[in-house]
Image 1 (cartoon, rainbow, N blue to C red):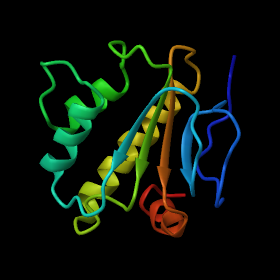
Image 2 (image 1 turned 60 degrees about the vertical axis):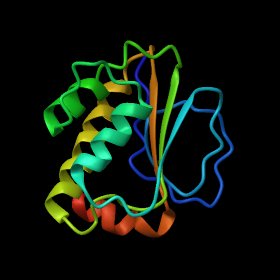
Image 3 (image 1 turned 30 degrees about the horizontal axis):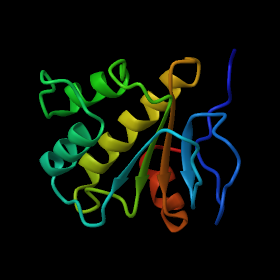
Image 4 (image 1 turned 120 degrees about the horizontal axis):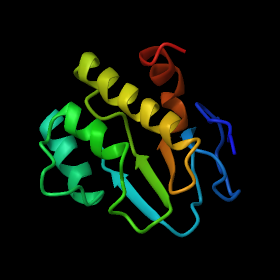
Length: 140
């Protein structure tokens, strides 16, 4: 089964069940699953990667670097939850455009990977006003 990838959906409230993986801009009412909230003001790559590694229950071998983050995010076999939601209150690493772009592209690639896999749904949420900034960083 091929599901469409939502790269951006501008909304103030989305209350439909999770049926696709992708970036959502606005609010989302997720179904049962694992929701990770990324707080405001994360300016360090290490801080972001440690937070996500902890909250996504990454295995002990997780190396707290971009490659390890990408590898773990594309696996998630240790999670029993089907729906995985990463909800941001702002754009982490916004003071470092190259790192923010790397982060977003890793998320985008993981979203694409999970779009055709039935074991998990991955949804990434950002505040609606960030849509143009994020689209510019990921080249859309």
